Image (cartoon, one colour):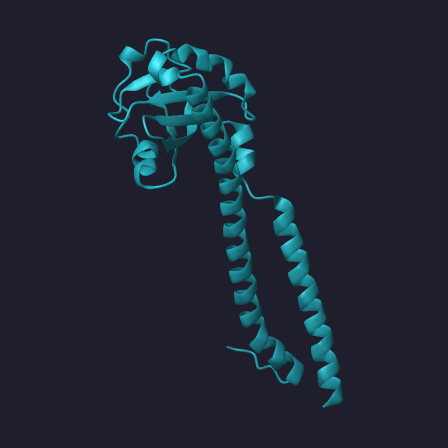
Length: 196
C-alpha cells in the first residue's frame, strides 16, 4: 500500500529528489571519468618526456649508426620515474636494446605488441600487461620515431597505481558540495512553502 504525501513541501521534495539524485550521479560519474583520464594523461606526458629524451640521446650520440645501445644504461637513472625498463625496437619488430634483458636474441618479435601497434598510427601507444620476458606487470608506453620505436615501461607497482587513481578528496568534496546544495534546497523549499 502506497502512502500519500499531503503537504506541498513533501510533494515538492518527492518530485525533485529523483531528479537531484540523477543529476548528482551524472555529475559525479562525469567528473570521476575526467579525473581518471587526466591522471592517465599526466603519466603519459611523463612517459613521452622520457621517450623524447631517449630519442634525443640516441640522435646526439649517433647510437643508431654506432649500435652502441649499452650506452643507454647511463640514461635510465635520469628518468623521473623509478623502476623503468627501456626497449628500443626496430621498425620490423626486432629488439635492438632492452635494459632488463641482456641477451636480446632470446626475445621474440615485438611488432605485434599492442602498445607498438597503437603507436604506428597515433602519437603513441600504451598498454598494461604482464611481460613475457621478465614476468613483471608493466605500464607500457611506445612512440615511433623514424628508425625505431622507443618503448618505456614502468613496473606496474603502487607508485604507478597511485599516479593513475583519482583522489578520494575529490569524491569527498563533491559529496559535501551536493549535501550543501540539498540543504539549501530544503531551506528554500521550506521558505517557499511558508509564503503560500
